[in-house]
Structures are given as C-alpha cells and as structure tokens.
Length: 402
Image (cartoon, one colour):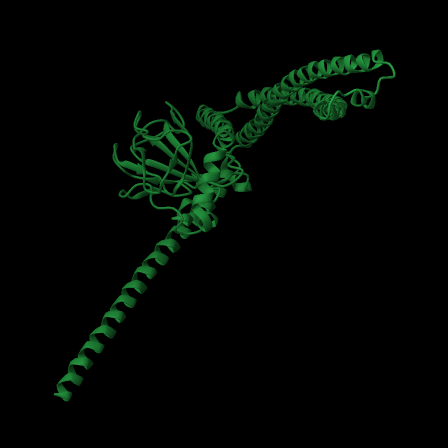
C-alpha cells in the first residue's frame, strides 16, 4: 500500500513539474516572439530613418528652404497666438481689477463719511465723556446698559478706523498691481507687433521660394502648411481644454494613484482589437509618420488606450478627419484619427476608462484608405512636419507604450 501511494505521489509531482516546465517554455517562447517582433520593428525604424536622411539629402535646396520657413512661420505664429491669448487675459484682468477698485473706493468713501459723522457728533458733544454718561445713570440697570453701549461704541469706532485704514491699503495695492498689468499689456502688445512684422517677412520670403518649386513640390508644400495649421489649432484647443478641465485632470490623477507615473511598455492597450499594423513611426519611404496605423475596416470600434480625460473631438474634412484627443494621468496624450464621421461617442471633459469605446474607425480627412491613426505625444505636445530629424517634435513611437 505504501509503495502504491509513493508511486502515485511520484507521478503527481512529475506531472506538476512537467506542467511548470511547459508553462515556462510557453512564456519563454512568447517572450522570444515579442523580442523578435520588437527587434524587427527597431530594424524597420532604423532602415526608415536612413531612408529619411537619404530623402533629405535628395531634396532640392529650395524645398529645404521652404520647409524650414514653414516651420519658422508655424513657430512664430504659435508665439503670436500665445501673446494674443496673454493680451486677452490681461485685458480681462485689468477690467476686473478696475471694477474691483471702483467698488472698494465706493465702500471706502461710505465708511469715511460715516467716520466723519462720528467725529462731528463727538465734537458737538463738547467735553461730555463716556464717564459723564455713566455717572448720570438713574439705576444699576441703566448704568450697565450705558456701560455696554459705551463699550460697543468705542469698539465700533476702533473697528471703523481700522477698516478704513485697511480699505485704503487694499486700494493702493490694487492700483499698484493694475499699473503693473497695464505695463505688461503694453509690452505684450509691442512684442505682438514685432512678431507679426517678423511673420509677414517670413511669409513673403517663403512665397518667393515657393514660386521656384516644381508642381510636385508645391503639392507637398501645401500639404505641410495644411498639417501645420490644423495642428496649431488643435494645440490651442487642447491648451484651453487643459485649463477648462483642470478639475477632471486632478480627479484622474488622484484616482490613478501610483499608476499615474507609469509610462513604459504596457501602459496602453491596442485601441482596436483587430487589424494589422500597416505603418509605424516611419513610413517605408523613410518619411516620419509619428504614429501607428491599424488597417481596419470602416466601423471598427475604437477604444481608449488608457484612462484619461477627453481634451477635444472634431469632425474635419481634412487633416485628422474625425478625431479624439485624450490626456492621461502620466501626462501623455493619445490621438485617434480618421474615424467614421459622426461616430464619436464621448465628449470633451469626459473621464473615460481604458477600453471604453470612443468612436468608430473610418476613412475621413487626409486618409488614403480605411484605417485608424494612433498617435502618442508627450509634453509640450508640439507638432512639426519637417523638424523631427532635429528632435523638435513631441510625437513618440506608440509601440514602446503598448
């Protein structure tokens, strides 16, 4: 009997060990497959980067100049936008401060009139003192009543004088800050004019070079300018959204806890459950893409790659087409583009969960076929069509976060 039990126990231990070995082998095989896939993608990216450098070398000097000028124009235009936004905020602040000063001065004048009346009343009473009033009391009850009244009057006079003094100090502080705001406004207005002059000069210079481009190069130039303009508008919308939805972003970070600091592999899930990757960070031509494209048919559910706050949604006929932008607790932003028109199922300011459907895939905007364009950006979330090779673009390879 003991021998039989020992045999059974030995068989069970062997089975367990074999199962663990099989599991380890399965994990090793899966890990090896992932590493091979990563190595393949890295190789493709390196090859694409080399092609990108070759393409840059083959470009005409005129086209290079035009691209450089477009980048400069976009950068200066962004500075103008920021200055105009600052000017608008300052003008609002100045108007608010002026109203506040006016209200405080009215209150101050009322308090000052009241104090003057109190001084006149005390003057008319002559040498009569609070002590005289107390000594003329007809009874102990009358004495106590007059005593407390006198004490209240003394405290009231002290508080009134202190209040007037504080109001005057507050008004002077407000006026000092108002003058500082007005000086800052004047400086910003002057800077804006300088930037606009520089912008006009750059645009004129660009047009001189554009006239020398071939028809094919002009087509590329128009595409670059369209993308730069759309991305500048998107950047402005998101900047405003970050202020508008600050409460939701704070709530997201608080609910995320320690996970909010994660940013490496595994932070995001695939935004679509099916479909092959048809383009990575670089196209096969070597041109920088800054995203991952998933080849899926129109109407495929698109899901949030991680918990986040919806920054903006749009239905455009160009550029990104129908798109959604989400900001996540770790500071990254994800862009989901070329969706089916009218299919967006979330709203700006909404907190979404990882895996939640946000829209359907489509073929809108600057798209050559049905697919999902999935993009990841890090702070400061800037975009530049032609400057990626020099590290001036915030788009990062999404595959490193999946």
